[in-house]
Image (cartoon, rainbow, N blue to C red; front, side, top):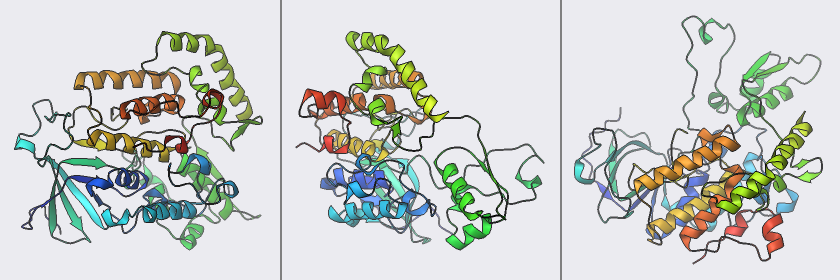
Length: 428
Protein backbone atom coordinates (compact mmCIF):
# COMPACT_ATOMS: atom_id res chain seq x y z
CA UNK A 1 0.00 0.00 0.00
CA UNK A 2 1.38 3.42 -1.00
CA UNK A 3 2.29 5.90 1.70
CA UNK A 4 2.76 9.63 1.27
CA UNK A 5 5.94 9.50 3.36
CA UNK A 6 8.77 9.12 0.85
CA UNK A 7 12.55 9.22 1.04
CA UNK A 8 12.98 9.80 -2.70
CA UNK A 9 14.63 13.10 -3.67
CA UNK A 10 12.21 15.87 -4.68
CA UNK A 11 12.08 16.66 -8.42
CA UNK A 12 11.90 20.38 -9.18
CA UNK A 13 10.43 21.76 -12.40
CA UNK A 14 8.44 24.76 -13.64
CA UNK A 15 5.01 23.59 -14.84
CA UNK A 16 2.89 20.53 -14.09
CA UNK A 17 -0.17 19.47 -16.09
CA UNK A 18 -2.52 16.96 -14.50
CA UNK A 19 -4.31 14.87 -17.12
CA UNK A 20 -3.54 14.02 -20.77
CA UNK A 21 -7.01 14.22 -22.25
CA UNK A 22 -8.11 16.82 -24.81
CA UNK A 23 -7.40 19.77 -22.48
CA UNK A 24 -4.15 18.30 -21.20
CA UNK A 25 -2.55 17.86 -24.62
CA UNK A 26 -3.85 21.29 -25.71
CA UNK A 27 -2.17 22.85 -22.66
CA UNK A 28 1.02 20.85 -23.25
CA UNK A 29 1.20 22.12 -26.84
CA UNK A 30 0.80 25.77 -25.83
CA UNK A 31 3.25 25.48 -22.90
CA UNK A 32 5.79 23.23 -24.64
CA UNK A 33 8.49 25.91 -24.44
CA UNK A 34 8.58 25.30 -20.66
CA UNK A 35 8.99 21.51 -20.97
CA UNK A 36 5.98 20.76 -18.75
CA UNK A 37 5.55 17.44 -16.97
CA UNK A 38 2.16 15.90 -17.77
CA UNK A 39 0.90 13.36 -15.25
CA UNK A 40 -1.53 10.84 -16.75
CA UNK A 41 -3.02 8.22 -14.43
CA UNK A 42 -3.63 5.72 -17.26
CA UNK A 43 -1.43 4.20 -19.96
CA UNK A 44 -2.57 6.44 -22.84
CA UNK A 45 -3.69 9.91 -23.84
CA UNK A 46 -7.27 10.75 -24.83
CA UNK A 47 -9.12 10.95 -21.52
CA UNK A 48 -12.79 9.97 -21.80
CA UNK A 49 -12.38 9.19 -25.52
CA UNK A 50 -10.12 6.32 -24.52
CA UNK A 51 -11.50 5.16 -21.19
CA UNK A 52 -15.17 6.15 -21.06
CA UNK A 53 -16.71 5.57 -24.48
CA UNK A 54 -19.23 2.96 -25.59
CA UNK A 55 -19.05 0.99 -28.79
CA UNK A 56 -21.62 3.26 -30.51
CA UNK A 57 -20.24 6.57 -29.17
CA UNK A 58 -19.68 9.22 -31.84
CA UNK A 59 -18.63 12.84 -31.82
CA UNK A 60 -21.78 14.94 -31.43
CA UNK A 61 -20.17 17.97 -33.09
CA UNK A 62 -19.24 18.17 -36.73
CA UNK A 63 -15.53 17.75 -37.41
CA UNK A 64 -15.04 21.37 -38.54
CA UNK A 65 -16.21 22.44 -35.08
CA UNK A 66 -14.06 19.95 -33.14
CA UNK A 67 -10.51 20.35 -34.29
CA UNK A 68 -7.34 22.14 -33.23
CA UNK A 69 -6.65 25.45 -34.96
CA UNK A 70 -3.43 24.21 -36.57
CA UNK A 71 -4.38 20.56 -37.16
CA UNK A 72 -7.47 20.01 -39.36
CA UNK A 73 -9.16 16.65 -39.65
CA UNK A 74 -8.08 14.53 -42.61
CA UNK A 75 -10.90 14.18 -45.15
CA UNK A 76 -13.08 16.45 -43.03
CA UNK A 77 -15.88 16.68 -45.60
CA UNK A 78 -16.35 12.90 -45.70
CA UNK A 79 -16.75 12.31 -41.98
CA UNK A 80 -19.09 14.70 -40.20
CA UNK A 81 -19.60 12.67 -37.01
CA UNK A 82 -16.63 10.33 -36.47
CA UNK A 83 -16.63 7.42 -34.04
CA UNK A 84 -14.82 7.59 -30.70
CA UNK A 85 -12.04 5.46 -32.22
CA UNK A 86 -11.54 8.02 -35.00
CA UNK A 87 -11.54 10.87 -32.47
CA UNK A 88 -8.90 9.07 -30.43
CA UNK A 89 -6.80 8.52 -33.55
CA UNK A 90 -7.07 12.24 -34.31
CA UNK A 91 -5.89 13.18 -30.79
CA UNK A 92 -3.01 10.70 -30.98
CA UNK A 93 -2.00 12.08 -34.40
CA UNK A 94 -2.03 15.61 -32.96
CA UNK A 95 0.19 14.55 -30.05
CA UNK A 96 2.56 12.80 -32.45
CA UNK A 97 2.66 15.72 -34.91
CA UNK A 98 3.75 18.18 -32.20
CA UNK A 99 5.87 15.70 -30.22
CA UNK A 100 3.80 16.02 -27.05
CA UNK A 101 4.08 12.44 -25.76
CA UNK A 102 7.64 13.14 -24.56
CA UNK A 103 6.15 15.37 -21.84
CA UNK A 104 3.75 12.71 -20.52
CA UNK A 105 4.42 10.43 -17.56
CA UNK A 106 1.95 7.59 -18.03
CA UNK A 107 0.50 5.49 -15.19
CA UNK A 108 1.35 8.37 -12.87
CA UNK A 109 -1.46 9.18 -10.45
CA UNK A 110 -1.40 12.45 -8.53
CA UNK A 111 -2.35 11.62 -4.95
CA UNK A 112 -1.86 15.02 -3.35
CA UNK A 113 -1.47 18.67 -4.35
CA UNK A 114 -0.08 20.84 -1.54
CA UNK A 115 0.66 24.55 -1.34
CA UNK A 116 4.25 25.01 -0.17
CA UNK A 117 5.20 28.64 -0.86
CA UNK A 118 6.28 30.01 2.52
CA UNK A 119 4.59 26.99 4.16
CA UNK A 120 2.01 29.33 5.67
CA UNK A 121 -0.94 27.43 4.21
CA UNK A 122 -4.55 28.62 4.01
CA UNK A 123 -5.75 31.47 6.20
CA UNK A 124 -8.64 31.28 8.67
CA UNK A 125 -11.20 31.64 5.85
CA UNK A 126 -9.71 28.72 3.92
CA UNK A 127 -8.14 30.95 1.27
CA UNK A 128 -4.64 30.31 0.05
CA UNK A 129 -2.39 33.38 0.08
CA UNK A 130 -0.52 34.26 -3.06
CA UNK A 131 0.18 36.78 -5.80
CA UNK A 132 -1.44 36.32 -9.22
CA UNK A 133 1.00 38.82 -10.66
CA UNK A 134 3.81 36.27 -11.16
CA UNK A 135 2.75 32.97 -12.69
CA UNK A 136 6.38 31.80 -12.61
CA UNK A 137 7.85 33.35 -9.44
CA UNK A 138 11.20 31.52 -9.68
CA UNK A 139 10.62 29.22 -6.72
CA UNK A 140 8.29 26.28 -5.93
CA UNK A 141 4.68 27.06 -5.07
CA UNK A 142 3.04 23.62 -5.28
CA UNK A 143 4.10 20.13 -4.23
CA UNK A 144 2.64 17.08 -5.95
CA UNK A 145 2.78 13.55 -4.58
CA UNK A 146 2.75 11.06 -7.47
CA UNK A 147 2.39 7.29 -7.54
CA UNK A 148 3.74 5.59 -10.68
CA UNK A 149 2.80 2.12 -11.92
CA UNK A 150 1.09 1.33 -8.62
CA UNK A 151 4.41 1.43 -6.76
CA UNK A 152 4.53 1.79 -2.99
CA UNK A 153 7.11 4.54 -3.42
CA UNK A 154 5.74 8.08 -3.74
CA UNK A 155 7.69 10.61 -5.78
CA UNK A 156 7.31 14.27 -4.78
CA UNK A 157 7.61 17.12 -7.28
CA UNK A 158 7.86 20.87 -6.75
CA UNK A 159 6.40 23.24 -9.36
CA UNK A 160 5.98 26.95 -9.86
CA UNK A 161 2.64 26.53 -11.68
CA UNK A 162 0.06 23.73 -11.95
CA UNK A 163 -2.55 23.28 -14.71
CA UNK A 164 -5.43 20.99 -13.76
CA UNK A 165 -6.89 19.21 -16.82
CA UNK A 166 -8.78 16.36 -15.20
CA UNK A 167 -12.02 17.47 -16.86
CA UNK A 168 -15.59 17.89 -15.68
CA UNK A 169 -16.56 14.25 -15.62
CA UNK A 170 -13.96 12.42 -13.55
CA UNK A 171 -13.55 8.67 -13.15
CA UNK A 172 -15.40 8.09 -9.86
CA UNK A 173 -19.07 7.05 -10.16
CA UNK A 174 -21.35 9.66 -8.60
CA UNK A 175 -24.32 7.79 -7.15
CA UNK A 176 -27.19 9.60 -5.42
CA UNK A 177 -27.78 8.98 -1.71
CA UNK A 178 -31.01 7.17 -0.83
CA UNK A 179 -32.81 6.65 2.49
CA UNK A 180 -32.23 3.29 4.10
CA UNK A 181 -34.14 0.45 2.41
CA UNK A 182 -35.15 2.75 -0.45
CA UNK A 183 -32.06 2.47 -2.62
CA UNK A 184 -30.44 -0.04 -5.00
CA UNK A 185 -30.30 -2.70 -2.28
CA UNK A 186 -34.07 -3.31 -2.56
CA UNK A 187 -33.94 -3.70 -6.34
CA UNK A 188 -33.74 -7.33 -7.43
CA UNK A 189 -31.99 -6.51 -10.70
CA UNK A 190 -28.55 -5.05 -11.38
CA UNK A 191 -27.68 -1.41 -10.74
CA UNK A 192 -24.70 -0.09 -12.70
CA UNK A 193 -23.18 3.36 -13.16
CA UNK A 194 -22.30 4.42 -16.70
CA UNK A 195 -18.61 4.64 -15.73
CA UNK A 196 -18.68 0.96 -14.75
CA UNK A 197 -20.61 0.06 -17.90
CA UNK A 198 -17.98 1.57 -20.19
CA UNK A 199 -15.35 -0.75 -18.70
CA UNK A 200 -17.18 -3.80 -20.09
CA UNK A 201 -16.15 -5.29 -23.43
CA UNK A 202 -18.56 -5.74 -26.35
CA UNK A 203 -19.55 -9.26 -25.29
CA UNK A 204 -20.09 -8.14 -21.71
CA UNK A 205 -22.36 -5.24 -22.65
CA UNK A 206 -24.44 -7.38 -24.98
CA UNK A 207 -24.87 -10.05 -22.31
CA UNK A 208 -25.85 -7.38 -19.78
CA UNK A 209 -28.55 -5.77 -21.96
CA UNK A 210 -29.96 -8.43 -24.25
CA UNK A 211 -33.43 -9.67 -23.32
CA UNK A 212 -33.69 -7.41 -20.26
CA UNK A 213 -35.91 -4.48 -19.39
CA UNK A 214 -33.55 -1.57 -18.82
CA UNK A 215 -34.09 1.82 -17.20
CA UNK A 216 -31.60 4.61 -17.97
CA UNK A 217 -31.66 7.46 -15.44
CA UNK A 218 -30.64 10.73 -17.10
CA UNK A 219 -30.87 12.44 -20.45
CA UNK A 220 -27.43 13.65 -21.47
CA UNK A 221 -24.59 12.23 -23.53
CA UNK A 222 -23.89 8.95 -21.75
CA UNK A 223 -27.61 8.30 -21.12
CA UNK A 224 -28.56 8.67 -24.78
CA UNK A 225 -25.64 6.49 -25.88
CA UNK A 226 -26.68 3.82 -23.36
CA UNK A 227 -30.29 3.90 -24.52
CA UNK A 228 -29.16 3.40 -28.12
CA UNK A 229 -26.92 0.47 -27.16
CA UNK A 230 -29.83 -1.05 -25.25
CA UNK A 231 -32.10 -0.68 -28.30
CA UNK A 232 -29.51 -2.30 -30.55
CA UNK A 233 -29.04 -5.22 -28.15
CA UNK A 234 -32.81 -5.81 -28.01
CA UNK A 235 -33.68 -5.78 -31.69
CA UNK A 236 -36.10 -8.44 -32.88
CA UNK A 237 -39.37 -9.94 -31.59
CA UNK A 238 -37.84 -11.08 -28.30
CA UNK A 239 -36.32 -7.71 -27.47
CA UNK A 240 -37.23 -5.85 -24.31
CA UNK A 241 -37.95 -2.10 -23.96
CA UNK A 242 -35.60 0.56 -22.65
CA UNK A 243 -37.09 3.35 -20.53
CA UNK A 244 -35.41 6.70 -19.88
CA UNK A 245 -36.18 8.53 -16.62
CA UNK A 246 -35.70 12.27 -17.16
CA UNK A 247 -35.95 14.90 -14.45
CA UNK A 248 -35.76 17.98 -16.71
CA UNK A 249 -36.39 17.95 -20.44
CA UNK A 250 -33.97 19.84 -22.67
CA UNK A 251 -33.36 20.09 -26.39
CA UNK A 252 -31.51 17.22 -28.02
CA UNK A 253 -30.75 18.02 -31.63
CA UNK A 254 -30.87 15.09 -34.07
CA UNK A 255 -28.71 16.92 -36.61
CA UNK A 256 -27.39 20.38 -37.40
CA UNK A 257 -30.23 21.91 -39.40
CA UNK A 258 -33.41 23.41 -37.97
CA UNK A 259 -36.12 23.39 -40.66
CA UNK A 260 -33.29 23.55 -43.19
CA UNK A 261 -31.47 26.45 -41.48
CA UNK A 262 -27.89 25.61 -40.32
CA UNK A 263 -27.81 25.50 -36.51
CA UNK A 264 -24.64 27.62 -36.32
CA UNK A 265 -26.67 30.60 -37.53
CA UNK A 266 -28.38 30.72 -34.12
CA UNK A 267 -25.25 30.66 -31.93
CA UNK A 268 -21.90 30.53 -33.72
CA UNK A 269 -21.93 33.75 -35.78
CA UNK A 270 -21.16 37.26 -34.57
CA UNK A 271 -24.61 38.45 -35.67
CA UNK A 272 -26.23 35.78 -33.47
CA UNK A 273 -24.38 37.11 -30.43
CA UNK A 274 -26.57 40.24 -30.55
CA UNK A 275 -29.59 38.09 -29.67
CA UNK A 276 -28.05 37.22 -26.30
CA UNK A 277 -26.63 39.31 -23.49
CA UNK A 278 -22.94 39.15 -22.66
CA UNK A 279 -20.78 40.38 -19.78
CA UNK A 280 -19.32 43.89 -20.06
CA UNK A 281 -21.55 44.86 -22.97
CA UNK A 282 -21.80 48.57 -23.77
CA UNK A 283 -24.87 50.75 -24.17
CA UNK A 284 -25.22 50.06 -27.91
CA UNK A 285 -24.96 46.30 -27.38
CA UNK A 286 -27.53 46.46 -24.55
CA UNK A 287 -29.95 48.40 -26.76
CA UNK A 288 -29.50 45.90 -29.61
CA UNK A 289 -30.12 42.97 -27.26
CA UNK A 290 -33.28 44.67 -26.01
CA UNK A 291 -34.38 45.37 -29.58
CA UNK A 292 -33.75 41.78 -30.65
CA UNK A 293 -35.29 40.15 -27.55
CA UNK A 294 -38.61 39.35 -29.35
CA UNK A 295 -36.58 37.75 -32.14
CA UNK A 296 -34.63 35.71 -29.58
CA UNK A 297 -37.87 34.38 -28.14
CA UNK A 298 -39.09 33.64 -31.64
CA UNK A 299 -35.90 31.69 -32.42
CA UNK A 300 -36.37 29.62 -29.26
CA UNK A 301 -39.94 28.78 -30.27
CA UNK A 302 -38.74 28.07 -33.82
CA UNK A 303 -36.26 25.48 -32.56
CA UNK A 304 -38.72 24.13 -30.00
CA UNK A 305 -41.34 23.57 -32.69
CA UNK A 306 -38.84 21.54 -34.66
CA UNK A 307 -38.03 19.33 -31.69
CA UNK A 308 -41.94 19.02 -30.65
CA UNK A 309 -21.32 27.06 -10.60
CA UNK A 310 -19.53 25.43 -8.36
CA UNK A 311 -16.03 26.42 -9.48
CA UNK A 312 -15.89 30.19 -10.18
CA UNK A 313 -13.16 30.75 -12.78
CA UNK A 314 -11.98 33.92 -14.52
CA UNK A 315 -11.95 33.25 -18.29
CA UNK A 316 -13.05 29.77 -17.24
CA UNK A 317 -9.42 29.13 -16.27
CA UNK A 318 -8.13 31.01 -13.19
CA UNK A 319 -9.60 30.80 -9.68
CA UNK A 320 -9.15 34.24 -8.06
CA UNK A 321 -8.29 32.75 -4.66
CA UNK A 322 -5.81 30.08 -5.79
CA UNK A 323 -2.42 31.42 -6.98
CA UNK A 324 -0.19 29.80 -9.62
CA UNK A 325 -2.81 27.30 -10.71
CA UNK A 326 -5.10 27.07 -13.75
CA UNK A 327 -8.01 24.84 -14.75
CA UNK A 328 -8.48 23.92 -18.42
CA UNK A 329 -11.45 21.92 -19.68
CA UNK A 330 -14.15 23.14 -17.30
CA UNK A 331 -16.01 25.42 -19.73
CA UNK A 332 -18.93 24.08 -21.79
CA UNK A 333 -19.58 25.40 -25.28
CA UNK A 334 -20.63 24.15 -28.71
CA UNK A 335 -17.09 22.76 -29.13
CA UNK A 336 -15.21 21.94 -25.92
CA UNK A 337 -12.02 21.09 -27.82
CA UNK A 338 -11.36 24.49 -29.30
CA UNK A 339 -12.64 26.15 -26.11
CA UNK A 340 -9.85 24.33 -24.26
CA UNK A 341 -7.31 25.17 -26.95
CA UNK A 342 -7.93 28.92 -26.97
CA UNK A 343 -7.84 29.01 -23.17
CA UNK A 344 -4.51 27.19 -23.31
CA UNK A 345 -3.28 29.93 -25.68
CA UNK A 346 -4.51 32.53 -23.19
CA UNK A 347 -2.76 30.70 -20.34
CA UNK A 348 0.47 30.55 -22.35
CA UNK A 349 0.25 34.32 -22.88
CA UNK A 350 -0.28 34.86 -19.16
CA UNK A 351 2.73 32.75 -18.20
CA UNK A 352 4.83 34.42 -20.93
CA UNK A 353 4.05 37.78 -19.30
CA UNK A 354 2.12 39.25 -22.24
CA UNK A 355 -0.52 40.55 -19.84
CA UNK A 356 -1.30 40.54 -16.12
CA UNK A 357 -4.37 39.44 -14.24
CA UNK A 358 -6.53 42.02 -12.47
CA UNK A 359 -6.89 41.98 -8.70
CA UNK A 360 -8.95 39.39 -6.84
CA UNK A 361 -11.89 41.77 -6.34
CA UNK A 362 -12.09 42.60 -10.06
CA UNK A 363 -11.85 38.94 -11.05
CA UNK A 364 -14.62 37.96 -8.64
CA UNK A 365 -16.81 40.81 -9.87
CA UNK A 366 -16.29 39.68 -13.48
CA UNK A 367 -17.09 36.06 -12.60
CA UNK A 368 -20.36 37.12 -10.96
CA UNK A 369 -21.21 39.11 -14.11
CA UNK A 370 -20.55 36.00 -16.21
CA UNK A 371 -22.75 33.89 -13.94
CA UNK A 372 -25.63 36.37 -14.07
CA UNK A 373 -25.39 36.46 -17.87
CA UNK A 374 -25.35 32.66 -18.07
CA UNK A 375 -28.35 32.45 -15.73
CA UNK A 376 -30.35 34.48 -18.23
CA UNK A 377 -29.29 32.43 -21.24
CA UNK A 378 -29.00 28.81 -20.03
CA UNK A 379 -30.03 26.70 -17.07
CA UNK A 380 -26.61 25.01 -17.29
CA UNK A 381 -24.86 28.11 -15.89
CA UNK A 382 -23.46 26.11 -12.96
CA UNK A 383 -21.42 24.17 -15.52
CA UNK A 384 -19.90 27.41 -16.85
CA UNK A 385 -21.75 27.13 -20.16
CA UNK A 386 -20.80 30.04 -22.47
CA UNK A 387 -22.47 28.86 -25.71
CA UNK A 388 -24.63 31.95 -26.18
CA UNK A 389 -21.73 34.39 -25.82
CA UNK A 390 -18.69 32.30 -26.74
CA UNK A 391 -17.51 34.76 -29.40
CA UNK A 392 -17.62 37.57 -26.84
CA UNK A 393 -15.53 35.44 -24.47
CA UNK A 394 -13.01 34.75 -27.24
CA UNK A 395 -12.91 38.47 -28.07
CA UNK A 396 -11.77 39.19 -24.51
CA UNK A 397 -9.09 36.49 -24.78
CA UNK A 398 -7.85 37.98 -28.07
CA UNK A 399 -7.69 41.44 -26.49
CA UNK A 400 -5.63 40.11 -23.57
CA UNK A 401 -3.22 38.49 -26.03
CA UNK A 402 -2.98 41.64 -28.16
CA UNK A 403 -4.73 40.05 -31.14
CA UNK A 404 -7.39 41.53 -33.37
CA UNK A 405 -10.69 40.17 -32.05
CA UNK A 406 -12.38 40.36 -35.48
CA UNK A 407 -10.84 37.37 -37.24
CA UNK A 408 -12.59 37.27 -40.62
CA UNK A 409 -11.36 38.84 -43.88
CA UNK A 410 -14.55 40.82 -44.61
CA UNK A 411 -17.35 42.32 -42.54
CA UNK A 412 -19.94 40.13 -44.27
CA UNK A 413 -18.08 36.98 -43.23
CA UNK A 414 -17.48 38.52 -39.81
CA UNK A 415 -21.18 38.99 -39.20
CA UNK A 416 -22.76 35.95 -40.86
CA UNK A 417 -20.22 33.10 -41.16
CA UNK A 418 -19.59 30.75 -38.21
CA UNK A 419 -16.55 30.97 -36.00
CA UNK A 420 -14.47 27.84 -35.52
CA UNK A 421 -10.99 26.89 -34.32
CA UNK A 422 -9.26 27.83 -37.59
CA UNK A 423 -10.18 31.47 -36.99
CA UNK A 424 -8.00 31.51 -33.89
CA UNK A 425 -4.63 30.39 -35.21
CA UNK A 426 -2.00 31.45 -32.69
CA UNK A 427 -0.30 34.76 -33.45
CA UNK A 428 3.32 35.40 -32.50
